[in-house]
Image (cartoon, rainbow, N blue to C red):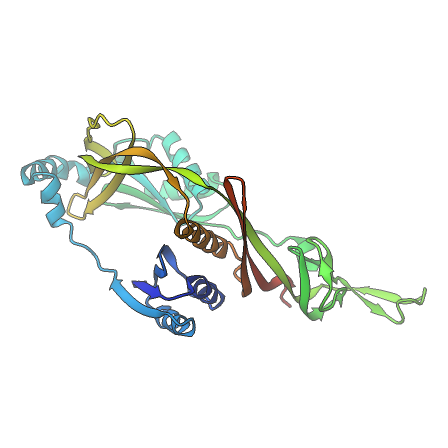
Length: 378
């Protein structure tokens, strides 16, 4: 998917963020400086984001579009061409006949770890000749011995043994299919749409998480008549409600920050596959520092990975919290809270309250939303 780096500038970035979430615009890598908001979004969502910015009285600019960078120059910059050619010559033959690692894709992290551990126990835990690897046997054994897999496919990709697997779909729970529909959270009911069973709530009712919204039976006759009949059925329908998401910030009046002094130290590691060939040295001598690493891969006959480490010396300073800092903290909290909203939620309002207690700012922010609080399709 093509992505763009966009910038929206204006008086109300929080309103822009709320509307974008409500209309399904997915934003990532959000940054804010003063009244300017920068973010990544898909090429498809870009026109919609521009319309939302216009509604909020903000200017919208596409900063750049993502392109594939060329790594040839950076390779020569960090490692001499002679070293690269030497490593290529030494490892080329080995890569044709040996496996240097395992890659698992298509499953959860826990199942990927189980598959890797199972293969390691079978002897695939290092440099292994490709001729000794039975791909068909691996597919069968992984599928049979790792619980919850629908299938597994094994193949070589250069120096890697790749296991592409898929997990089984969970069996439907009988109570979920035939049982009652209950509230997923505390809310005020706004809409009830019933296609099976009997609604026990109506618009305006307050419900708690776990309360029954639609019962799995139909009452025939007057419910107050002792002789009325009840017929069991599958509860089906949608119930919407108004609910709230909130978080609290505690910001000290004076805080400690780390400021870079300007002194740096850089070193680079070289990897062949997963194997470390040249290790970066950590000889900076800094007491307090920040470390930043950047990986660059070279897709050649034999792939290389360069990992450059940069250490920045820092010193601690005491800084008084100002309005700009508080505004950035609130914006970041709104962004994090927005990411936690239920996918079905429609934002109807966003609010903030702030007070100062001694040497501490207490800030509470929350979204008011309408969302699906109970459902089961017919």
